Length: 297
Image: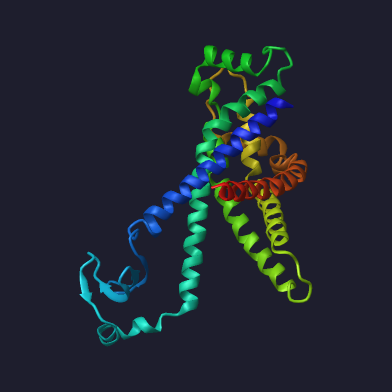
């Protein structure tokens, strides 16, 4: 029991740390990394960018060309030279902002999935070997790890199945975090609408939305990428004595040809039953810890 708990703790720590780091880097380089001294908001036009800046000396507006050169300094010049700037559709700006936010979340989630794939691949390989260890070749996880590395090497041995693991983890965590954010926002809006007739404490909103969104995102992601997990298990339980000559797609094709397409979803029901409550707990706990750490600062 201690080993699975410690493994889960390490893996989840890597996932959320990678996601948080990726989010901060994205915001630094693509959102406000070049506007640290002032609070600037703007819109892109065919001629350049219109910036409304709030600094120490008050608020002013200016148009800058693509190289950052100042074209005009007054609102009257802006209106005379670029009258269409005053007719920016707020709905279009909000839609663009949401699309950019979804792209950020998906990308940072995919990065987190890629990082943790390098940790989870050897762990799952050893787990698969122990589960089919009918001849008692290994005494335990450490013995299995040492034996595989000594006899078959690091990349061809311990990291067998790394390719399909990346195919599973990278898009999966992009969808995972993007789905979580979209569902949580929707659930929070629905709960806020209920407040008018049946008031609900705000903290209950957050916990309910986070738990439901976490459960849905976890189950939905597993349903999408489950065939990759079946292929990965097949690759990681194949004999180590012979080098793996078949690629991921060939292994999947062989499984479907021999057992039918339903074999690619064998065990999915149990996985979904496990995934919903587990992920419904992970996100609320993660956000609760963040709040506590923030209060401590």
